[in-house]
Length: 241
Ligand SMILES: [Zn+2]
Image (cartoon, rainbow, N blue to C red; front, side, top):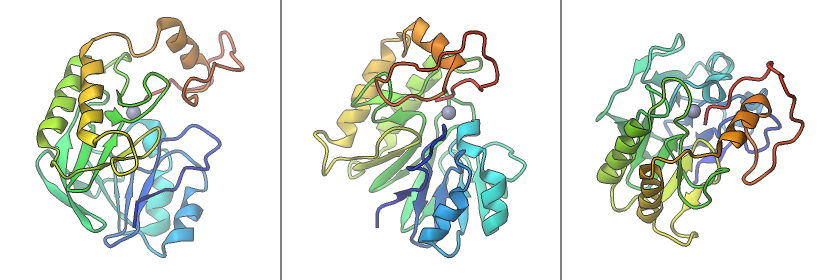
């Protein structure tokens, strides 16, 4: 059974959160959608573990709630207060019916990991299919403090290097799920395209677009124009994709 994006119906900014219903029943990221625990319960009775790709707020805001609700083991690279088990580069972790390799993929966030399986990759914000910048192979932003495009490029290179030839499905932190079987390209081609775009070392978003995005909603659907732009508004967090 394919992983289920349990935040697909979110009305506020959140990462995608994937529920893998086979044992060990696993959630990849916790997201930021209030009530996500109810959506999880609609599909499964219990949750064995939660694996965090990185600790940006849109990926972990609901971690406390889900952790308490299901008493699931939390696996993370960085030392989060809720962490039960540390994961590091080169380790393997069972996610549902698939054994995945943990690949440390910094650049967008220091503690970012991707999970590479024979069939699927859970790529967090490092490698995504579509976002406001590109429609068929994109990568996480690196323009905020503490981020590095050079590191992100190296991370994409190691993903390309270590991804099994059989891997054909991408479950990323934002945007759509991509499956080679139904899409126009092999997943490896999509990854090569994302890497080639990252290597141009150009801003992912035009400057004005970025500054507006910082003040308004942290996330817009692809190609949407910013709406409700509040000049000087400061209550909303910075986007962190
Ligand atoms: Zn992020």
